[in-house]
Length: 260
Image 1 (cartoon, rainbow, N blue to C red):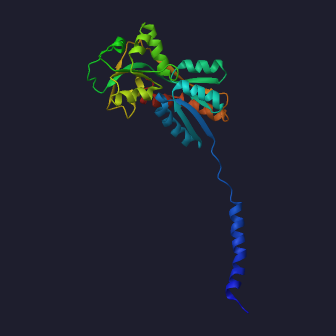
Image 2 (cartoon, rainbow, N blue to C red):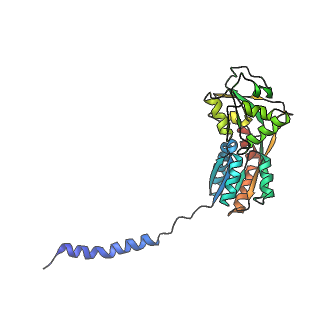
Image 3 (cartoon, rainbow, N blue to C red):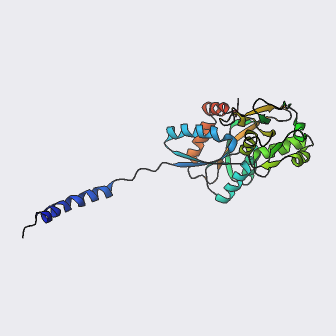
């Protein structure tokens, strides 16, 4: 007996097979090369801006892991992967070179430490490092084990002979510059020693101010971007290094308070 539905189904089978065959033959989209950057918190916003521009120019993807410079160093040791490392202190690059983690590095900007207080400095705190010992102020400091600002704090206060006293006086130690900023912003502390550039962060612009210290006490330090030995795209990573160290790259870092 004639069944028109069956006939229609038989007619459609070749079309369905052809469509399926065409779909299977569609080429997969080309995967973009990807760079992984370990970046200290203080430099994160500047690096993201540079990365956005570089991605457009080079048709690639850039991922970032942000944290305290010491914690990032330990992550690199454990992960044994990634392309670039930008800590907040040159000492971490020197350490990474000595352990063969970093094979090359370029200067991308600079930073220096400062006293950080609430917007407008309502307590009238002066540019004296000994204020960190005062019982009148709630202080918070960075840990030297996890962050570049912690190491710089240890260096500055040890040179002044007050490091251990300041540690005894502080409310608590934070793991990075982000934690120091949050302590002032949320009124958990009156005074901190942090990287000067952090006062330029959008979230800090209207709640945090810096009291700059004498350059002999808190000198300017270079920021070095290092190429990791594990890089799977070393040529692309070197291109990023060159871009970050170019006039355009330096201008971006300067916009975020990380250079002149």
